[in-house]
Amino acid sequence: MAGAIIENMSTKKLCIVGGVLLVFQVIAFLVGGLIAPSPTTAVPYMSVKCIDVRKNHHKTKWLMPWGPNHCEKLKDFDEAVSRQIEANDIVFAVHIPLPSKEMSPWFQFMLFIMQLDIAFKMDNDLKENAEITLDVSLAYRDNMFDEWEEIAHAIEIRKLKCTFGSPKTLESEGRHYDCDFLPFMEIGSVAHKYYLINIRLPVNERKGINVGIGEIKDIRLVGIHQNGGFTKVWFAMKTFLTPSILIIMIWYWRRITLMTRAPVLLEKVIFALGISMTFINIPVEWFSIGFDWTWMLLFGDIRQGIFYAMLLSFWIIFCGEHMMDQNERNRLSGYWKQVGPIAVGSFCLFIFDMCERGVQLKNPFYSIWTTEVGTELAMAFIIVAGICLCLYFLFLCFMVFQVFRNINGKQSSLPAMSKVRCLHYEGLIFRFKFLMLITLACAAMTVIFFIVSQVTEGHWKWGDITIQVNSAFFTGIYGMWNLYVFALMFLYAPSHKNYGEDQSNGDLGVGSGEELQLTTTITHVDGPTEVYKLARKEAQE
Image 1 (tube, rainbow, N blue to C red):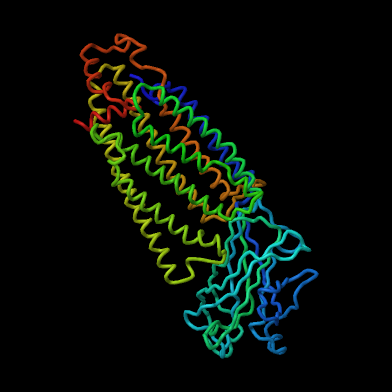
Image 2: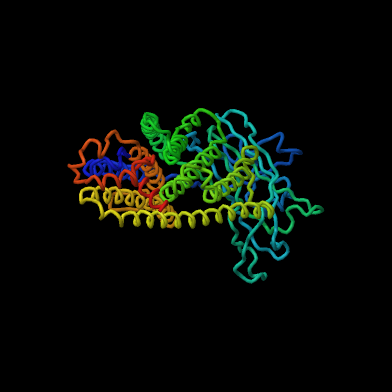
């Protein structure tokens, strides 16, 4: 009875394999925790108020906040009033990065959020549900003496959500509102050394543009980018893991094709899972160091979505193939009820991502959350995806329960066999259950580490040792799923051993009657493992 490696490998060798995988898992966490820096860095920027009285100024001139060609600056708006400078002639300029620094392609992306300093004033109060209109431009250059080249220009509207903690009286004038951060900009690559942002707040009382938004004192930006050190560690992991998964995938499929029977659905799905893992591993990010590929964030989301959709589908099919009878087995169409929610949920998240990051390829200042329609649409996609995820886990829990009940039912008939044969099948069932528990543990660790990374400060300090929790989460979980897929393809590859053929029945203590029972109940069914065949027989009964 040829089976999979998980069934024919000795317990000692399996423990060695498990120990080696555990060592690699610990290394994956330590690489992120001890070697890599924090995944991202947040840099605060204070805009500089510049004066520009030119017509159509955003097409003819870029205003620098500092440097040899810096703009004419305003100290505050009181100075603007005293000099009779209109609001339309004031530009908020932000240079990225800070003086004496350079941006790098290793930073991978830039995400900016905006905070407005709005002061209370009796004759210029902030209206309820006020909206601010921003005339924003973005430019780049790679040398301090080059001319600025425009990347994007847009007119954006943001809703203001502010609270005022004091009574609105004369005594409270000058105190600031407490306003939520506003999404401002996201770029999927950092291909240039210097960036310049010019922000205008055009005022048109007749059209009601930027009227009733309070007295804006300053505009602050917070820029978030990936740390170069973390990027290098991340690229190194991808470069190392890609050939590892690719080699085991080729080896696995070669063993499948050498068999006399055709591959069953479970084996095909394991192979497909290996392909999706290889797809997410391929370090195409190396090209982003030399090319201005702004679509890399969107491409990364798509790759992750494909892998997780394949992983969720694998769990469903893996459970289903161990509980269905032979007529329902080995057909992907038999799982449409369970795989359907995965497909719908993945499609909803894909549409949401295209509506956000897809549009940002042309307009980096765009955010789907800035309008009521966009917010409702985004929430609808997320809610539908959440419902599908809940339905999926209900299906999965039910199927896991059915599988364990199915296997336990078959296990109750084992005492009728000889002691050696009974111990053999009990060992196979134990290994199958252990693999199921490892699967649940991997899923649980992903959720747990995600929650921990969100609620902690980002690092733990033990004496002189600093552990970067967020980095450890990324590298550890990424390594864990690679090891999980590696272990699946290795353990479920066909074994070259033939248990029961290499040994005589007498050695196993099996009588002719029992051998007939085993032949009629197990060996005539094609499948990757003997537990697979046992489960099928129990389902038929």
